[in-house]
Image 1: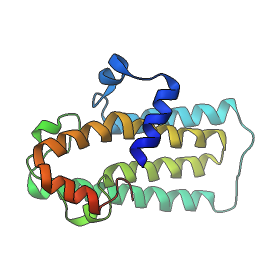
Image 2 (image 1 turned 30 degrees about the horizontal axis):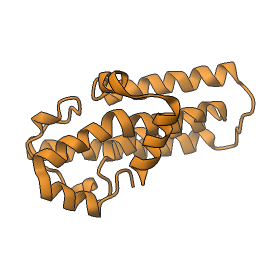
Image 3 (image 1 turned 45 degrees about the vertical axis):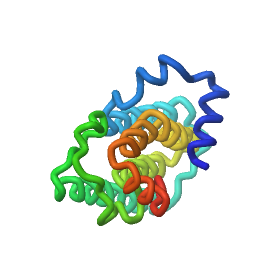
Image 4 (image 1 turned 30 degrees about the vertical axis):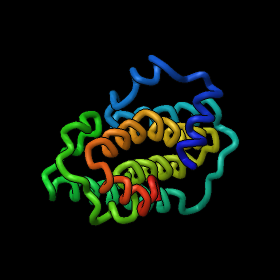
Length: 172
């Protein structure tokens, strides 16, 4: 289902062909988080209203960011524990299909962690316009990071990956 809606959005936007292939697995996800964070801040400055400031927003943001960082950290730790690469730009260097730890809950816990950090930033900014970047981040990740990674994993780990994909969701 996720793949279907991602494809529909990109078809509607006319994003395909060379442009799509040129962006696949090119930008490190951490850089994407920094870019999305900067764009969220810029949107909050350009469109200061409406906002949703509330008492305790900073605390909620810290808890969310901490949870996101922990999830991403445990994702990296699971990869390191089996000696496989954590760099998604080189999926051909993957040596092992990681299905333990946080990978029992999400096929992409590092990206879930990054998303929670961005959500925390949005709460901290308390600006509705900034939140526009959250679905943009998910759409970008689905198309230009996760899709190509999953194609590679399907080719390299075949039935084991198909079984894993059938039991564990892409995000959560």
